Length: 112
Image (cartoon, rainbow, N blue to C red; front, side, top):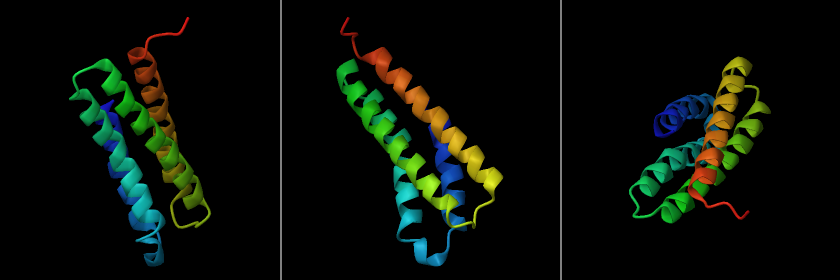
């Protein structure tokens, strides 16, 4: 999970770099922060003392992945990123989000 989300960070930095200069402190910065937040929270949560704490950080990472997906959709409107690259990175972000959801579900006891 951490490795995959770290690869996503590098891909997002490439997308952010392709954005116009006037977006460097706006959307580009937000994309990078959201992407970095994902593996950072997974790592911090893994270092915690309990599954409950780990689950909380995984949930934060999940929220960052949702935020990142929205930002990548917004980038599409600029028309400055190769659509195939953007599609691949958005697919990777979705995959990471799904993995985070499954990891969170494995850490939280069922309410059945």
